[in-house]
Length: 329
Length: 284
Ligand SMILES: Cc1cc2nc3c(=O)[nH]c(=O)nc-3n(C[C@H](O)[C@H](O)[C@H](O)COP(=O)(O)O)c2cc1C
Ligand code: FES
Image (tube, rainbow over all chains, first blue to last red; front, side):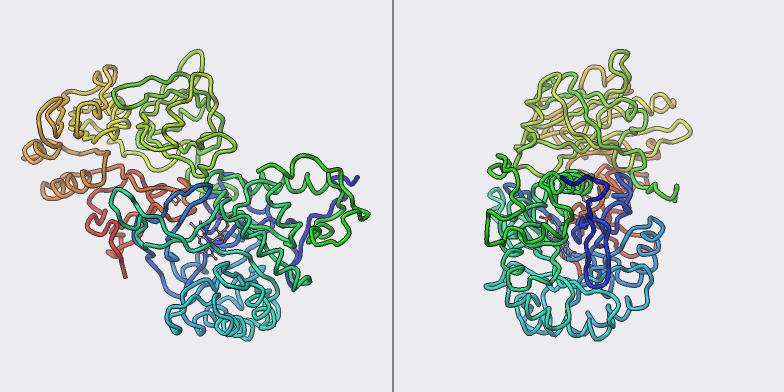
């Protein structure tokens, strides 16, 4: 049995080291200011900021959300201040908090991603760049980048070339594809150091009073516990074909148990998103619980548990005392 | 910035366990009193609470936001807070079913508050449906400042008017309008408005209720050049400013339209700055 003082909870993406594997999910923590009221941002692995575009964006009309069974749909439309205001206001503020920062970027064209990467290249204090390719590509019939291997590769190659070798790149993929491992292989060979899995699933709610789509943007992204099995599956499949690539797993993580599931599937970090809306301290709770679970199950480090569900021999050395926890929701 | 570790936003907000002290039916609503200890002293009229609903294994993953109706101090419980809840969805029905002694996961106090004048003014408070809830707490504060407080409440039908006896003590006059005529005069709260605010007889309007009503009041208030502070209602996923679902188009200081979060930059907003014609409309 290991104890809290010797347990190694850290994780690495590219060359960057994070003291804990807990990240906020992009778009679910804004730029951290609002959450700083509830816990010190420096205590988690990193703040992943809301995907930032080149220009300020007003986003989609309201209603922008609909609660669904164990989940929610959102259609924010990437509202944001644009990269200039973001770099001027949000990054310096996060640095005063001693938070590690992962900047999420989104573009409408391959070039836009590269321009964003160029803006970030010389900014101090950025631990990694997350490339959100789950946005519609205006150059290619509005098809989401992450649904097309060629576009996905083009974006990551462009960002890699512009940003140089020092800042790790994390590609964020969409689950709305036939074979997520194909896209994962493509972006990794294009230069991604890590993968974020998964973005939201496209969904719709129809308001039975008005008898029209409920959301102002008609369709929205499904998140929350409802998508967790889909996300765990995606992480498992991708880890199987790319076992050396760090994965940040996300989708409905609400507790340490949920996060543990992703670690076992092959994630070396986890993001908490929608759960923050229900509980501003959710990410701290998940972090504490995950650490406790890993220690109590006899792991000496986080990395030892990564992908543990893939082991062939279930009677291996690390046979843990099984409890009834597995069968619960 | 207040300090290094302290974000200025929702500075006093905390996540606490609050005990239900009482839960009474009033018309079509529930009047729920919860204990919030010393956080009561930081709550201002207009602020709201965000409550987790459905219990630990709930499929309802988002908090529900409720305006704080009134705060008070009770010798036996310390600070208390009263909420008026309409049981119209799964979450609010769950909340309305909570008995005395139940414990709730509450984040409080959140959002902006109604601006309180420093000198006595003539205030007109307008509430639609359960939107009257925060206005009674506001009326108490205004009366304490020596203001004249007139109130108009409206709803589709009498059961949807929330006007408790104890609340009426703080208002100088109370007029009720229902669309079906089942209580007070038949009509809408906006019907008497032009006349009431003509020739500078009202200094400030405070309102809370459905968006359509707030928009109609704003139009009349702008024409009459009367300050109008309204508490808006847009659906909120987080209530603490991180999700961007609750936005309201507003005119910013630079004259452009900005998308403001009604949970942080609101719920109390300057009615004149809200771009009512753009609410729910696609923008470039
Ligand atoms: C309101 C909202 C806004 C989001 N915005 C972004 C975004 O800007 N960029 C992005 O890559 N993902 C965004 N996401 C997706 C999340 O980062 C995450 O991938 C997804 O919600 C699944 O995790 P969860 O179930 O823990 O929320 C958003 C999700 C929500 C609910
Ligand atoms: S409700 Fe989430 S930002 Fe306002």
